[in-house]
Every structure is written in C-alpha cells, then in structure tokens.
Image 1 (tube, rainbow over the protein chains, first blue to last red):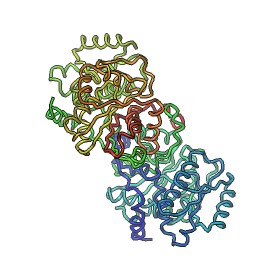
Image 2 (cartoon, rainbow over the protein chains, first blue to last red; image 1 turned 45 degrees about the vertical axis):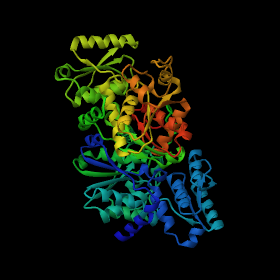
Image 3 (cartoon, one colour; image 1 turned 90 degrees about the horizontal axis):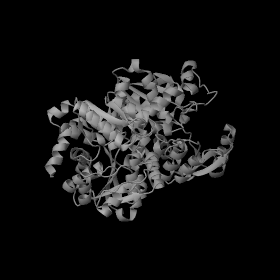
Image 4 (tube, rainbow over the protein chains, first blue to last red; image 1 turned 60 degrees about the horizontal axis):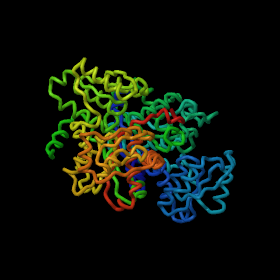
Length: 313
Length: 313
C-alpha cells in the first residue's frame, strides 16, 4: 500500500464521479467551537460516497470478468452505486436484495439499470442466492465495504478534502461496514499532515468501537439505530487498516444523532442521511477535545426516506 | 429608478448578507430539457432572500428614525429577517405577530433579538397593534414586500445571478407579496441581456396572475396552499413594477409543487421551503416554452417546518 495506489484510484474514477464541494457553516463552528468543513458526498452521483468505491472496484476488473458482470448483495446505497457504476462502465450488475426490501430501494436499483435478484431475508439466503448468480453468470462478487478496491475508491473523498484543506487536524467519518472509515484512514495517513482520523458510530451498533478494544471483529446483537447505513460490522480487509490508522471511535446516542441531523437540515439547509449526522454528532460530543481544531467531516450521503416527511410528501 | 440605485443597494448590503452560491443539477436539466441554474437563497443568512431587503431598508433610514427602531408585522421569514438585520445594524426591531403564530417562529424571531409584540389574528388587530408600537416608540414601519428599499434589496439576488450567468434567457421567481418578483424584474431589466422574468404562483392563491389580467390588485379568497410564503397579495409599490417588467406568471397546482419539492430534496439534496419549489414547478410546467433555454431559478428560502418530518425528528 502506498500513495501511488491511491493517486491512481483517484485518476481512474475521476471521469465517473463528482468532485464534491466542501462547505462550512458559521452556525456549526459556533456550536462546536472549532473550524469545521464538510465534504459533501450527499451531492455525489446517486447520492453517496459508495459511488467512488463501486466505480473503482469495477474498473479494476480485467476484461474477461467485466464481460461476465458484477454481483453484490445490498439493500442500501451500495446496491444503487454498483448498479449505476456498472451502467456507466458498460457492465451488467446483478443486485441480490431481500424480497422484503423497501420498494423505493428496489426501484432505485432498477432505475440505474441493475438486475435485481430477490432472496430470503436471512443472511444465508442472500449468500446462497449470490452464489447461484455467480455460478450461472460468472459475475464477480464485489463486497460493499470489505474489498480493497472499494476501500481505495472510497479513500478518494478524503484525498480531495485534504487537497482542498491540507492543514486539517482531524477527519471524522461514520463507520458501518468499515469501507469508508478504512479508506479515509488510508488517505489521511498518506496525504494528511499529522491529521488524526476518528470514526463515528451509533452507540446502539457499536461493533467497531468494541472491535478496536477486543482486537477481533465484533458483531451487533441488535441493529436498532436510525442510522440504517451503519448497522453492519467490519470485515477482514478493512479491520486491520482501521486498527492501524484510526485514532479512535466516538459512539453517540440516538437523540444525539437526531439533534445533529436536525441541525444540518435547519441551519445548513442540506439533505443528509442519518449516517452523516452521526459524524457531526460525534464532533459535537467531542467538543472539548476538538476545541479550536480544524476538523473535516465526511458527509457520507443524502439518500433519506422522504415518505417520513409527512407534512410535505 | 436606474442601474445605479441597484448597484448602490448591492454594495450597501454586501457586508451583511451572503453572496449565495449558484448550483446546477444534471437531473433537473434532463427533466426540463433546459440549462437551469439555481440561486440558492436557502443558504442566505436566516435562510431566505428576505435578509437582503430587510438589511437594505434599515440601512436606508436616516440616523434619527434608526435610533427609534423598526417595526413590521409578519409571522414568516420577514419577521426573522428584520430581527436579524436590525441586530446586525445595532437597531431595535419590534415584530408584531399573531398570538397563535407557531411557537417555533416566535422563538426564531426572539433568537435573532427581535422584540415580539403579540396581537389578535385579524388583519385589523395587527394594524392596530403596529400603530400602537409606532406611537409608543417612534419606530419606523417596514412592510415585508411593498417597500421600495425592500424591493431593491431583494433585487440583489438576481443581480448576483446575472453577474455569474449573464446570458440567462429567463429568470423565474416565486410571487407572494411581490417583493421578490418586483426586485428580480428590476434587476433583470437593468442587468439582463434580453432576459425575461416569469413569476411562479400556486394556482390556489393566484392573486398576482389575476392582477396582471385585471390591471388592479386582486385578493385571494382562500389561502389553501402548502407554499405558506406565497399567500399574500401584491402592493401598490411592487404591482406597477411587476406590470411593467414581468413577462408573465405561471400558476401551478399543489401536487406539482409537492413533486418539485420532492425532486429538489431527493435529487439535489438541498433543503428548500415550498415557495421555492413553486418556481421549479413552474419551470417544469413550462417545459415546451423553455426547451433548450438558459434559465435561472431563485430558490427563495429554506425555512421549513421539520416537525412534519415525522420519521426523523
């Protein structure tokens, strides 16, 4: 692993992803007593940073596997990201989704040209179905977060942020499956200037926090958090990177996540998903530690379920 | 009225307002078959373009009236705008609000340092109460939309937009009280290059549309629209400007407003108030006329009632 791998990933995917804007908010700075900038992956194509990793992973396939397509199992942002990235690159994407996945997510994947394959809702079901797709089509499996090319693609968000703001002292990213946090940590290690990386995680699904303490990958007993993108656990590829390059993980309570999300909507006027609010919540919670520091926050995405916005939709 | 008055208003208020960003969206361009840019007054201080007019109107007072403060009646964005603009300029602002105004709006005005004076909910009540404040304090009344200095301040949003995009062929702004549309029309007349101005109005409160037809200020029989900022009618100062410089007014149905608002949230990932969605709805409705045209949309503000966002808040 070296700088060059990251730089190559960045040039590789650049034509297929947005260089997202970085914004600041006086209201947030006043609230946190720090200088905070936000890398807006909510403005990324398909609405989340996952577009970066998905694009890089497909582009790293050799021609023959590309011809056979790609497959993943996801009902979240990675499903849409792989579908859209594949379409942009002229590749077929099979997306294995549980039959009870929200219709809006299924339609989104189909809208990006993904071929949806339904499976049962148990973990074994999705693995069996994924294997069936592989056997039948020869498609290459791409894991949503535990794949080095996905991680390198995700890393490009923090690379761009550090290019724009080289003197950041902290970068904070949410941690779910670990693909964004590992990428952010690699980018910061190679391109930061004594910059530390903090993970932000809901207390209710604090598997990453516990994994760093125990030294092995921990699992969540329940997945009861509003931050639906962060319910999964770390993997064998990203865990060692997180162990080596992440300073620490801040856990936050559900009300803290909602307060941070409300603050972003009300004061910053941008749409983010709850996972992104987890990162701001962690910064607010770490106010003492981050006082007067220059802090970058990765806003991971903006795909929220607007059907909950009862007054308007 | 000349260019110079507008240029002076712009330099006058520049230190006290944001130069808001202008953004574009491929999704919107594809939907409308046109080249569309958005002037993001939802990112303006206190969340709406009203900050411009309020600031300009206070700054145009001579010293003696300034010392006696300003007063307005509003339960919407102008109440907050006048309160914040006054505080920034070291002036006292009295805000007359109906006693049944939403608590969140009252708190927002107080948060910006405004002195809230409650009145009954009938129009005569607010006028009586406003007069009482004037008699008691000597404060100068500033109308939210029917005041030439408010209109000139509001005009600066379109001036900046035309400075950034001089070759716009259309600018579309929502019309409620008429202060934004009149300002937009003046700015476009003096700084546009054969650019036409369209007003966007909910069909349910189409007083401006009817006023342009009848040649006199029409009133709304009911105010049943989600676009709560657009329920008021035109005034004696702004109506002649709108008559002279606005090309036409497009009216849109409530479902069209909601669809446009949803599109902005889902695809552009920014928070706007329903009044802003009215402008996009009008552009979508005018697709045939605007095909392949360069169009600017004034997103008027981003102050929405998040208590309706049941799933998250």
